[in-house]
Picture 1: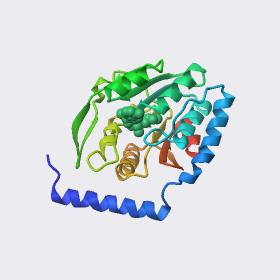
Picture 2: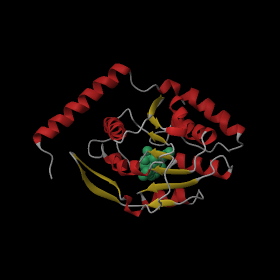
Picture 3: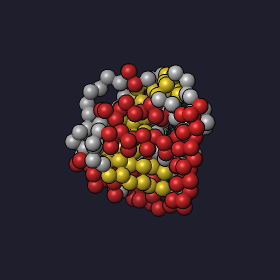
Picture 4: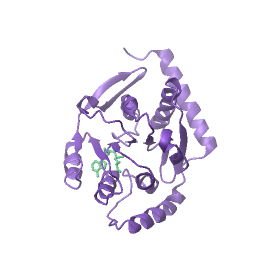
Length: 244
Ligand SMILES: C[S@@+](CC[C@H](N)C(=O)[O-])C[C@H]1O[C@@H](n2cnc3c(N)ncnc32)[C@H](O)[C@@H]1O
């Protein structure tokens, strides 16, 4: 079904309101990148993990790497699913090799060459899936084909940082992660959405909140701002991570 004029106007008005709201609350804080970098480098050194990371441009920035590392250190994570391979995948692998992250890990990636390249560097599976066209209410986008995701383990760390988004054509592509919310661990989980300073991802944050409210899931949320913005949702035994 194509989007009606009325629902398009509603969606654009909503985007505009979110933009004003974000403007009032201030944008990202690139000047804090060095603060997160220091903490991340300190923690890598404490864990004897070699610093081979390139947290630049479209790759994970330091506040995202910090959140992943701290979650692994402080929370008993049994199952990680991440959308979008890259620096975070290499970090997850290093944390698993050091025994800091004891649970399973799965990375979903649509780009064949990138999946293969990152797959050669890490020990956990990279699930190379296609992007499929989806009509999701008023949203139309290409999202990951999640039918290939066979694991039934509840997810207790879900990281949404793929597929590529940000331009007009692909701004809602990460909304394709919404079906995974049903797979989050009822005992508690942490959900990290990257790039939440952008319109498409900010709308996704609102849709995630609506989902939790509808399902009566008690959550706390937090936000990290540096070169990019991460919004974090936490529940149950992971609730304290909203203060990370
Ligand atoms: C925002 S990036 C993924 C970031 C990832 N979580 C990280 O920590 O770097 C989203 C997508 O961009 C693409 N991508 C990222 N870096 C790439 C590279 N160096 N070459 C090709 N594609 C890349 C991949 O398809 C990836 O899933």
